[in-house]
Every structure is written in structure tokens, then in C-alpha cells.
Length: 449
Figure 1 (cartoon, rainbow, N blue to C red):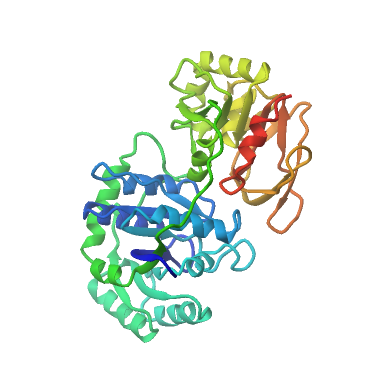
Figure 2: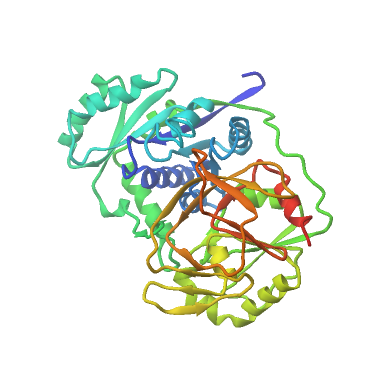
């Protein structure tokens, strides 16, 4: 790679979900940040909860690095490379957390952690849950090391290890498999973050910062950090390039952000800044809607804060009036639930919401909906958009609304998910990624009826 600079970087992967990737990632980010390194976190795949926690872990000593999604299914490989190089340039170390198992993708290994590791020439550090395992780790690691010769499986860290003598069996297994052992994590409650129905806990009373610092201190005792860093040399171009700024034209884009609405792809927010000044407001805590040319409501947990959202009638009324009078608004998943008429909780209680779109959502009788999606708008926007769907609620009534898009899953099977439009308000269960579709915000801003 010409005109490149050496940096540190690696990807943490695992044989499967539930191995401890996220907690180990958080601990490593915080530990190395405390040592004075500027750590840039990344997350493979469409997850918006882990990135939120990564950003907390990376915030230390007045330095803050938002975690960035790297998804080679939702975006092109060139875009993934550009993102990684751009955000890694000013950091000392880049830590990428994998998704699911190392080779799990949308279709076979397409979009998997392995694909991204090879795309970025990153060494892979395996995280193996060894709670009920000893020498059997050898064939497991041998298989992952040899399955794809183009992958650099540089080391392994064992999780849920009982005792130092247990680790000695695992250490021997790793060496016999040709994978360097880099230490272990003894079982400890400090390495567990309580879970919500959509994933990791993000409730406001939880001490994330203290928990993550405790994780870092626990990890430092038994993981060979210096050797891990020695194995992590990577090359980053000096001038990775970036986006070409669009003319903002003095526009204002108001983004709902608080405990109820915080599922963001960071690059989506960065792109919005190219089309206008981005201001944030809280549908729960603010009494006035800021003057804006467009409103953006991301996903989140409106069902957990339904009472407080409903009680802020001044905000609900202003949003309804804004949308009724032709203001441009885009809402996804939890944002869509908030712009609807009501939310019904599992216990049957019903809370009025904004009433900007004639639909109702409920948490009753709903099952998990999960997966990648492709979206094509029927009129006005010709490029395919990609995104992700993940929710437990369902639409119980949708009035006279009709979808303005064709939506399929990753295998091109038609989905019953919709993109609804009422006046200039667009709502859907989809979390669309438009970091590479730079003209999508422009489509929204120019689509006024």
C-alpha cells in the first residue's frame, strides 16, 4: 500500500454469538484508552446498540470516538474500506468487534466478520467461551484457522475460564492448533451487562462507565495486552479520502435524541450535516420543537418511555401540527411508533402518541422480526437502499396508508414491511443505512408535495 502509515488494529471474532465479544471489546477499548491511546471502535454488521456502548468505552480523558458500523452487505466493499481508513487515520488503535460467528453472513460468508477482516487486512483475535471446554479447543481453532487461507487468525483469548490450570489445557490446545494464546478471562459478574428484549441494557439508571472500567481492570490481570498490540500492525493510507460536501443552503435538520430514541448509524448523522445544520432535541424532555426544515426520528425504546412521551403533550401537538402542515419528517422503527396514534404495551395499557400518521402499534402478541432488507421507492428515488429490521412490536392498525416502496429480504423474497408516506412524513420499521447513498437526504428534502 503506497503512501501508507503503520497503525495498530485488529478484529475480535468468535465461533458464535454469546461468546463474550462485546464485553471483551468494551474492556479492551477502555483499558487502552486509559493507557493514553486514542481508540477508534468499529462494529461489523448493522448493530446500533453495541456501537452506543463502544462510544462510551472509548470516551476517556476528554477524548471521544463514536463507533462506526462496517457492513459489507448494506454498503459496498469500497465504502467499508473508505470508512475504516478515514476514521482510523487520526487514531492510535482501531478495534473492530465482529458480528455473530466469524463466517456468519447474510448469505454464507457474505457480509461476515471474516469478509471484513480480509477486506481491511486485519488480524483476527478469536474469543472462545471455554466454560465447558478444555483440549477440544484445538480442533475448533484448527478449523477456524485453516478454513479460509486468506484470513490471518493471529491469536485467541479464552473467556469463562475456571482456573489457571484450566487455562493451561486451553493454552496447549491453542498452540497445537497453530493459534497463539493471548490469555484468558476468569468467570466474573463484572463481565456481564444485563440484557433488554432488544439486546444489551441501555436504561438510564445503569452505570455503564463504572461497569466498563471494572471490565477493563478485570481483563488487564490475565490478558497479554502487550503481545496483542505486537500482533496488531496494520497499514492505513495517509490520504484515505472522504465524502464531497453538499451545499447545506442554510437548512436545519432536527434530530430526536434521548433515552427513547438513540439507535443511530453514526455515518447517517455525519451525512445529514452535509445538507444542513443538525440540531438535537428530546421528545421526552423538551417543551418546544426547534424550527427545522426536516425532522428525523431514529429507532429506540419508545415503549419503555411511553408514559413520559405521552405526558409531553406540548411536544406531541407541535410534531403533529408540523407534519399536518407539510413539514418533512422521516421516522424509523421506534420513531414510527412515536409518530403513530397510540402505543399499546404488553400489559394492555394504551398511550397516545403524536397522531402524525394514522397507525397504531402494540407490544402484545408480537414476535421478533429480524433481518436485512432491500428497499426500492416506487416513485422519485431510483437507487436501491439497504437496511436492517429488528423489533418486537407490530402495527396493529394502519388506516388508509399504503406502502410507497418494494421491500425484500437479503434473498430477494418479498417482505410485508412497508414504507408509508403521509403528506411529507415518511415512516417505516426499517433502519436504513444511507451513508453511501449520499443523495437520499436530498430526496427527502426535495420531496415536498
